[in-house]
Image (cartoon, rainbow, N blue to C red; front, side, top):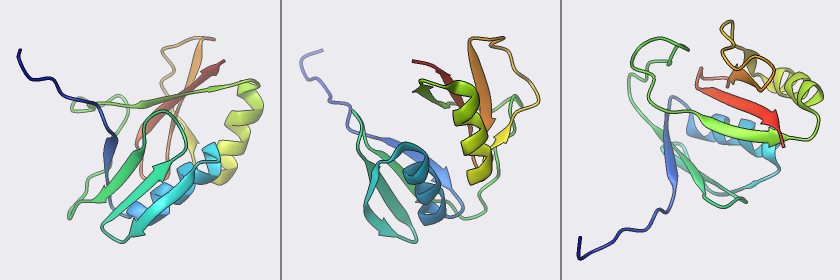
Amino acid sequence: MSNTITFTSIVVNSADPVALATFYATATGWKITSADPDFTTLDGGATPISFQRVEGYQVPRWPRPGHHLHLDFAAADVPATVKALVELGAAVAEEQPGGDDWVVLTDPEGHPFCVSAG
């Protein structure tokens, strides 16, 4: 391929971009760098994460078919981090395929994400 592309961000569909970005900002310590009701960006890691409003947004259900991606995070104390995330509005997923390697949670809109030791 003569042209190359550069990876610039992850964009997550959402019913409420500001609320979802606020959840992840609180969880990660990252900063919301732009916010409006239709598109909100969170920055502070290697790659920014944006959240875009989608009319008629349907919550992904882990591990229902059609699930396309999830975010992975690392924490020094996984049990304490999971507890804090649940207090922020996350939920521990019923299905846990990682055994003791990671914990699958869902954010307040139902997007799955994982936390592992790191």
